[in-house]
Image (cartoon, rainbow, N blue to C red; front, side):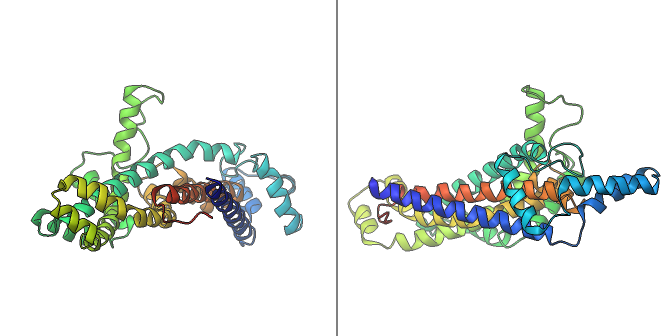
Length: 334
């Protein structure tokens, strides 16, 4: 047990290093960008009405002071970390004066639910179907299923999203194609709102499931195809062990560990796909919020979204990494 605690401590140190480097890189990219957040904010303000030149200069000086862009970059960097420790990254420029972290906290549950749903479905169903296909290699249905999986898996997320949008939004308009819930529904813990949220999440989740399912199916099928030739599987079959026990206890259990490693490696890619999918369906998650922030030159909001995203993805990978020694005793923890 002591070895496992040291293992967890090392992984925790790696987690903090990854989060620190990721957030620092995001800070540098945003602050080295040629887009000025102050000028972007002034452009939106002056486009709505006419201001005297003195008023524009006064607003420019106030925004520059507020965001500290007149200070050296190193000072801005340390000020950023000081504010981040307190959870305050300043007000958003595109939704002034709403704090940037408040906007992120509003959008975060939408993305988390969408990611958890799609990952759970693709990982569980894809691995189970892949294991059955690898163990029952002559099954015609599973063979046809594999062909479909091979055809869908290379397609990018946004292509699948656009296909679903056209089919179920225009050709056969049975599902909503935009937003997180219907406009005439009052948000709250009521059946009308929950049903509307679930209905609006079908197409975004389906686009992620269809693309992600193929890789888990094909990977698990390849692993199981090798495992079924092992001596212990052959001996279990000759000894009359039930097929259900062989598939569940011997085959899937041994093939699940490499798939768990693959899950940790693909979390970042799945999140990137979620950003694109949310933009296609105008889903009110972190992806849509990030695109709006980039287009509006809102550095505070970009940093807030990126900080939460880096920390969330790194923490998810950390949790998956901690599960390895518990599922596979062959993993060394000392």
